[in-house]
Each structure stands twice: as C-alpha cells, then as structure tokens.
Length: 396
Image (cartoon, rainbow, N blue to C red; front, top):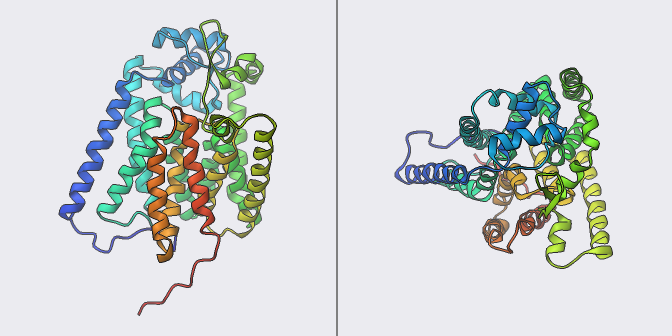
C-alpha cells in the first residue's frame, strides 16, 4: 500500500551496482551543491539581513531598514523580505555569524536537509524501490529540483524536509506534532498556504481535531510572539515595495528595475503569447477545475501523503506567484505519481514517458516560466490515474 514504509527485500550490504549508483548520486549531488554555492549567492543575503535587523530590534519588513543590511553584507541590493516572522527568528541565529561563514552553513544545512527529506520519503512512498534504482531516482530528483533551489539559496528544500517530517508525524500518530509542523510550514504561504488549508480541511472532515487545534494554537503563538518581538511589523507589508518586488527586481532606491519571470500558469501562457482576456478565461477555468478536484480529494482521500502530493500540485498549477526554485516540494508528487503508475503494468510506459518529459522540459524555452511544463506533465500523468486501481492479486 502506498504510504507504508518501504522495506528492502535484501537489506544486506550494497551490491556492486547499488554502490556505483550511490557513489554517482553522492558525488554528483555534492558537486552540484558546490557549483551552486560557488555562483556567489542570491537570496540568502536577504535572509541574513532580516536576521540582522531582528537582532538589532528592528522590523525586517521595513525595506528602509532591510536594504542597508543587505548591501553591507552582500555589496548589492536585493528584494524585500516576504517570509513569516518565525523564519526571520531562525535566520537571526545565522546572522550572529560572519556573512560568508553563515552562507556556507546555510548551504551545508540545505544539502543535509535534502538528503534527509529524500530518506524520509522512502518511509512514506513505495517508490523508488530499494537498490540502485533508488539512488538513481534521488539523483534524478536532485538534478530536477534541488540544484535550482541550492543555486538561488532558497527555502524549497527546507519546506520539503518539513513536509516529510509532518507526514511522518501523522503516520506515527503524533497528532500534536503534526499540527505544529502544519503551522511551521506556513512561513512561505504562496507555496504552503493552500496545501496547509487542504490538510486542515481533510483532518476536520475526518474529525481529527488534535492536529487542527495544535496548528491553530501554534500559529497563534507564532503571531503573538512576533507582535511582542517586533510590534507593528505587519504595517510594513503595506509599503509599495512589497507588491512591486514580486513582479520586479528593485534598484538601490527601491524603484522597479527588471521584470521577473515566474513559473506560474499566467507566466507560462504569456511565454507563448497568450495574454489578456483569453489568459484570464483559461486561468478562471483552471481555478474552477482545481477547486472541484480539491473538494473531491478532501472528501475521498484516505491517505495524507497522497493528499499532500496532489495539493501541492494544485497549488503550483494555480498560484499567482512561484518561481522554479519553489518547486522542490514537488518531489513528493514526483515520487507519488511514479509509485502509482508503477503499480499498473499498462501504465509503466507512461511512467517512463513522464520522467523523460520532465528531464526534457528543462531544455524548453529560455526562462523559468517554461519550467511550468513540469506541472503540466504531472497533471496529465495524474489524470491517467483517475480510474480505480485494479484489484491486487493475493500471493500465497
């Protein structure tokens, strides 16, 4: 059953092929991580600056306070800080360190969290199978998702790790901890807000109140503490730079500079010249389908891992703002779809096609708006699973 822990048939020492696959995964992933780090960094400077502002008793959402810290650390300006206050608290720990050392620590932690998240997934989803194929799948996921996130110094890997811990907590009937992590992942709401609401609605529909209450209490606690630490921090969210910074990079005066590409449905459509009213009609139609599908999913799903895989897919299908580096958590969807497709002999060719097209999609187009093809490929693959699974033959 999908959702149960994977137990290798032969858990003895590595075979020659498995060791070779493991070595390839390890060397390649570490090399990619080092290459990403050597690019010089992108967004950690904003996180570090937010932590510095917090340590100085300021408001990290006030761009006039944040900008100076960004420049003093990185030598160049970057965009505003958009994350929840509790993420700034975590960054304040790294902000105690010199910038370059803190940046190295952030890189090392994210590589470790990526490995940990992948290993956690093996306890949740029966794919990839143990052996060399598992290490190959880990390498595949690293190339598709992790490298972009590492290169941008973004939080997608952190979100993936926290989501796997959330799912394991639920699997182990640790309901209070489940609710705590449901609140914790909301530090980047454009990625986790919709899935968080879907999980809460599903738990309520099953009358599982403890995780929901724990989530509400934890989230309330985070917000109360944030008001104590930085009174009125939310007022800075109304500054015009916040909205402008989502669509444009900003110059040293906080003025719009370069239009951002986004990995969203509107951004993908615009890349093919579909804009205006026609694009709006497509988006509204897709949103209605997403709402209907999610409603059915909440009513019929019996597996939190499956629900999570699909809810993140719907989120990235419809969110008005996401970049390719946010996609790391879609490795849950990737593994889940592979697990489901591999159960049906008639769909194994589709499984191979899906994985091949995901790789091919990295070479389509000249900007990250085209990476939305990954979402499209996952949706089309998921549609093939709408028919009920064939009955499993009993083995003696």
